[in-house]
Length: 415
Image (cartoon, rainbow, N blue to C red; front, side, top):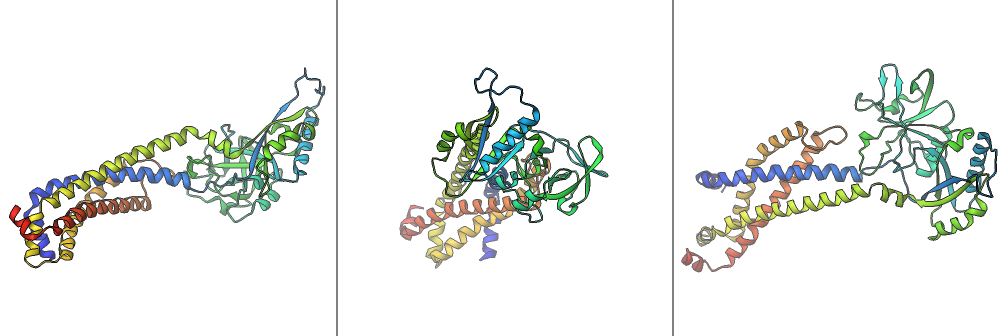
């Protein structure tokens, strides 16, 4: 049967040539769409390195001099002590699990501070994010160490004179996993005279849902108690099963219980809400891209489906003749589907060559600094082949089944 199939395809090479060209173009376009969706969705669903469930941000303000409750002549040391007292009061709240103070550090943060890190000839990118936090920051957002350290262990390791960094800090310039450099000495920023030991390498903490791990390199240092008022981010994690009215109940008691010196709490916001606001434009763009990609995929599907549907319809008399000569319905299905899949198999290697060159020319989206990689390329190519094979199968199955249900004599008479 295979020999007859090859012979027939060769004899029909002129008509098949146009079909092969169509399959080639469809395969390349479909691969590009799938590759783009692969990068977008993989980035969105990838591990973020933090957990914002049951977490809240507390906005704080200082009493204005015109306020009757204003306490004049507070020194900077007293301001730091006031912030420390506020943190302690929050820790005593029955529903609060952990409290942290930080600078430009919490997830979905539009503000940034940067710091370079260097060890001998190794130097991090100049825009690596610098986070200054109190130890409980790890417990609030549940950071984890690259060597398996728990948030509690990370909190215990953070102190003055040490630092932590994401394991990909020196990538992509150097193919180095920082977890192998624990306890090594580094210099931070422009101060080349003071060395800091790396007490833990952190799992990569992404900047947001749409930022890839490769774009999220960071360092973490201690925000000491004598500088607490410099930290404008006051964040808490509450215990599981907290009341749905926690935010309203908290603000009702905030004025009485959480006013310390000139510091008072003005607002509580869940990090789910902060996340939504931070990437609203990106979420809208993702929806628009998915709709556009879906529309394109439907058109590709209908076009390819229609091509093979029409091709099979035109061969009704051939199907009837072969069945009249003894071929079974199963034989005909296998023959017609084999023909379509064989044509797809012929064009796929050329399509893959074009696809690879598109990626090599960096015309595809970057994923962790790479526009093409072996794993990503073959995953997207396999999905493309499977989808096209499905389109061909459906385009042949339904008209062929309908043609086989017609009386053979009637079909031959019409022909």
